[in-house]
Length: 382
Image (cartoon, rainbow, N blue to C red; front, side, top):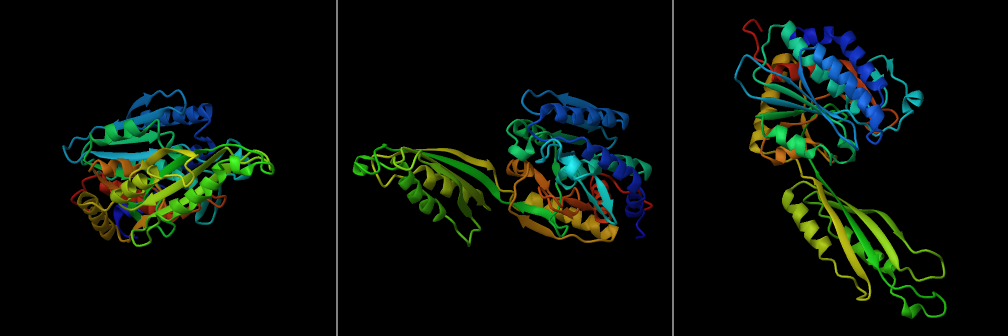
């Protein structure tokens, strides 16, 4: 490594890993507000100490959200760094999956998804200042608390803040091979409730209208909506019905998971599911739910931002591909608003939501250099 910014990012390793350890040791499952708020306390304190202007958005059902701003001397593009601190791991997981380092890998619950991304956001402005690289424009960091459960409490804030900025850098982890994320499937869940008529399964089964049989028809119908060419998937993932073995099932429910690459596909699938007509007219069906996150498509604005990142990587001396992935993120909301969005900038590693979750330290420090380059004007000397 010979680029001064990339070298400086790697020289931050000890400080970066200390921040990351602090974040991981403060467990923050989405559903445990007291623990989440303890992490919010830590973030608020640390960000204020690092000269961010901090606003705390109080929440009742989930952890508080943190907005931090750095006003730039330059009037360049306004950048939103988008992160979340909640994890899928229940309280107490740290005892089973302790924060630890093994050569170039660091393990721990939430280390990859996405506390390393928060650490990148916290260290990038300090690194820029140390190297005399002024911020291009206003820099805002948003740390939300419910991404892992669909962002119901943070979506409005995400979209409002995004519309005050010119671009959004999403500090979710990259793909397992390190690729940045230039596309994501839209994600939707649909819930079907079938109501039929109960009857004795031995004495008078014909008097019954089986909700469970109707669910079976629905499963086949729903999964027939898959389209391999369009990369659309529809899968019934949860199904329940009936009460006891000698009663025709009066009630049954099913959950269908939908993933789409284009908004038009989401509309096609939703219309079909909502229009489902039971085979047995005595059975009624109610369909609820819908698209939770729109697809993150490679728009012209998103392509231009990715090309800017590619130019920065060329200058720094490393290369990362752009990939389309199946999982959703909050970047899907901002991209759907037409705001330039680039995802997967936070860390490199493997195992999000898995017990072998880890980051690769050297590659993650390269990402720290890249994010720093994207939010700053390079000094003439570099």
